[in-house]
Length: 309
Ligand SMILES: Nc1ncnc2c1ncn2[C@@H]1O[C@H](COP(=O)(O)OP(=O)(O)O)[C@@H](O)[C@H]1O
Ligand SMILES: [Mg+2]
Image (cartoon, rainbow, N blue to C red):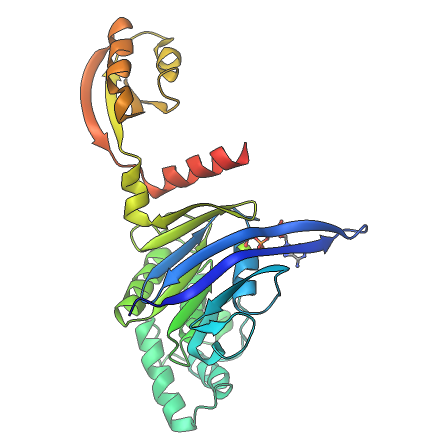
């Protein structure tokens, strides 16, 4: 099935803020598509409009313009709600409950009976790596454990789509890896995952496609591996050349960096000869010439830089 799980078309949303109630744009003319069964990442720096986009998607706020669909239902209605799970940016859970009791409480909202609820919460705690026999109350949980509890909570109704706003923000690398592993496992179970993130380490390797947003606008989108491969850069590694070498090379490509004794120059394919000639003129020694794949982090930073200027 190739039907999109989510489609947003030309969404705009602004807020009135301050004493003068001036309009401030949070999301502008944003379109995106999420295919069923994929892990989709909405990436962007703080304030880029990620949470607002999620709120529009879930019908928590209404856009001034645009349209869309959620699991085949028009945006803004509640028809799709019992087929999705949501983990908000800063979830709040009652601290006096154990994980098991907490899930039972939230599960009642979905009208599950006691027996199936008990079984379901056991399965979910297992899935997120929290044990059901654990008598710790949630106020004793680490940030990582709470986040895993939050994911379990978002899965209570066995949703087709899970929407998570910054699921691993504030976690240490081990906690982030645990969340990533859970997300990959959910994808294997056939679920569609929509996550937002301002941290790239959390999505590199797990997202199938991404949309990068900056200042409320979509600035780059596509299949992650295509985006990374599309740049077709070549990395030229050089040695020597004196103090102004980096500056001279900067005229060939803005992507010059130093790594120990070496100078790294990343250039587009058509500029390789020009770069090599410049290096030769500078009396530099050639160490290597290799095709170079940008990391998501570099693509992200470069895109944000280009669109913030
Ligand atoms: N309820 C609100 N009232 C006024 N301004 C808001 C509100 N929510 C968000 N904003 C503003 O909208 C912009 C986008 O915010 P947000 O969607 O939370 O971004 P992100 O989740 O990417 O950090 C920011 O400039 C933010 O200050
Ligand atoms: Mg946010």
